[in-house]
Image (tube, rainbow, N blue to C red):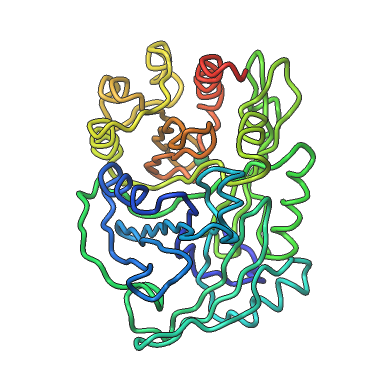
Length: 363
Ligand code: FE2
C-alpha cells in the first residue's frame, strides 16, 4: 500500500560501511555472501586519504571504505564504533531539491550538494544526518555513463553468488525514548509512514523486551524499522548493542532471496553462523503457519524460521554478529506473499539472542 509521496526516492542504491581494513572486508563478503568485487578506489586511482571497494550481487550493492591515514574523519568513528554502516544511500530524481526540502523539513545537513566527476560524467550527491553517526546520501547518476561512481576503477573479481537479490529492509537501534523522535523525523522529513508498530507485549521474553516501529517510504519500496530498548528484568539486546556500538546505529540489514534453502545452505557451508531455535519450534510449525512448500525437516536442519500474515508467508534467518562486537548482523529473508517482518518469530528469536548474550555475559 502506498500513500502520497512527498519525498520521492527511487530506491536504496547502496549501503556503505566504514571499516579498518576494506581489502579484508571485501574479501570476506566475496567469499561468504558471494559478492562480485566490481570497483575500487585508493592510492592507485588518486584517492590519497581513503580507499574502498564496491561489491555487487543482483541489485545489492555494498561499499566498504577505509581511511588510509591517521586523522581521517572516519578513523575516530571506527575507533569508537568498530566497523560500521555509515551511509544508506538513496537514488533520487533531483538531489538539490531533495537536500533543500529535507533541510526545510528539519533535517541536519552532513554535506551540501556537490558534483563528483570523471571522464564518464558527473554524479550529483548530498548527505543528511540520521541517528548516531549514520547519514543518508542523496544521489543521482542520470548524467554518468560509468559503472558505479566517478573515481572508482572497474574491477572484475567475481564471487560465487548465492541468490541474494536486493536489500529488503535496514534496521536502526536508537536510545531509550528516541524511537518516536526518529519515527517523526522519517515522517516529517522523508514523508515515510509508520507501517507497523510492535510494543513490549509483542517483543518480550521472560527477561528482556524492545519496541519497534516500521517506517516505509512513499513508494513503499524502502523500509526502515527502528528499535528502542524497553525496560525488562535483564539487559535487552538493544541495550547491549548501544553499549558496545557506542550509541545509535544500524543493527541489521535484511537481504532478500528467492531460494532461502539454497542461500542459507551455501552460507553455512562457507562458515557463516546463524542464530538457532530449539527443535520444538518446528514441532508446532505447521499448526502455527499451515501448509508451506518447503520440507520442514530441511528448514529445521538449517534453522530457518517461518511466519505467516494475511497475504502469505515468509522464511527468514539471522546471522550471529559479523563483527567482533555484538553489533551488526544480517537477515536473509524469502517472501512468499507476506509483506510483514516475522512477528510470530520474535519470541523464539529473542530467546535465542538471550542464549548468546548469556554466553557473552551481557544479559
Ligand atoms: Fe529484519
